[in-house]
Image 1 (cartoon, rainbow, N blue to C red):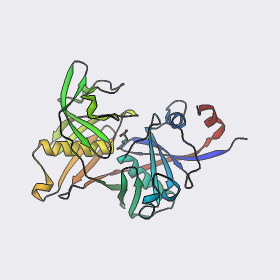
Image 2 (spheres, rainbow, N blue to C red):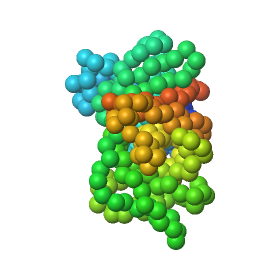
Image 3 (cartoon, rainbow, N blue to C red):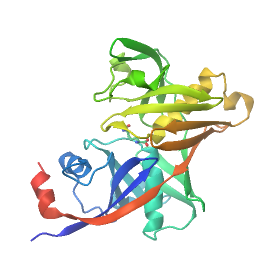
Length: 289
Ligand SMILES: N[C@@H](CCC[C@H](N)C(=O)O)C(=O)O
């Protein structure tokens, strides 16, 4: 007999997700199932899955349950697990509001990257405190075709290589992961951002995401880019005591990133729920391998 699993579809600056509400953690999501759900022709379609589980019901989140009722169990489009997803957290917060679990204002969401504080504003924007960026030492470089650029290694809970380029077209078609050297700098793979300047404290990016390919936006990537641009510009809020705000244009919209003097990084942008539906579990059985 076929039963049905509820899902929603949402996006943040066109980084889109299949949301699977599963308060008691009863839905099995092996990588093949996640990849099938994210398939844009044969599935629902998305850059990743936001599995919405009560923290108390998930072994990776139980310790955060006192601080954050809900756990964002994030998966990339290929089914792999990632530490954090910045746009995902904003869309997750919007889902919790949509489902009536929270109202406008402040809330906390558990992620593999720790508890994230989120603010749902009246105007529809969602701000998330992404925590601090780590800037591991050592040179890295990114190559596409015959070109290569020095890149900044930035860790936002997940790994990024940020390369400043003259033209975003130089990133090419981004159909496969751009090689990053030395590979040993990123033992678990890497998200790669290509960045151009648009004006003072205003940049634009294209991104190739680990486990999802080129996407229309990446929240952790936008934060990594803002920090890399600030350091390149000689801007360091911790040293001056003054917050620094960068506008980051992504193919799917605009994100505003502020680094505070305490090192914390806040990201603001839209988050939208666009559809709700049901997944036929008979179909799911055919894709589970
Ligand atoms: N789109 C996300 C990042 C998702 C995780 C990433 N692909 C990884 O594997 O680290 C974002 O908005 O941050």
